[in-house]
Image (cartoon, rainbow, N blue to C red):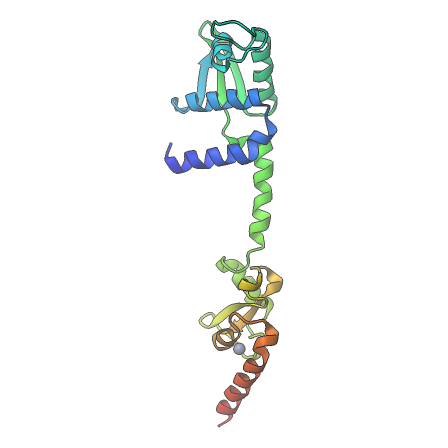
Length: 211
Ligand SMILES: [Zn+2]
């Protein structure tokens, strides 16, 4: 597993999964995840007693100087919690312990649901994705919003009606098809600020083409 993939897993874990887990479930999931990375199939076989010692904690063993352990019943409860939340699949048990299959955050339903919401905000971006840009050129019938001239694949641009530095977003409504010349004039200005310059330029271009 490469570093980039691991970073993604950690990000999804911290941002999306952790809020759904109890502190004990969190530490057991991390323990499982860390150890299952060692196996190719994301599994770990371990006994509940060992898990109990790994989790430590002082449940019911307050003042003891001996290594503390989470009680058997509590370990069972934590494991079942992770199972119910779809974080692990519980397999067979033999004398070496129980087999646990660890589910990566992106495959856990609770997390997948949250991830599914993300593309919606990406859909809002009509500026950076070529196919979305084209959608807007089609919407504007390949005509410059400012001078009314036809544009082509070569000189079609999208102008931010409200400029980006004034908080204008890459949304459908804030983007207008514009020819290179008009976009150069409008660039960074609001429509109000740019209008006199645009008008002057349009008139000049018209006059030139009539000569
Ligand atoms: Zn134009």
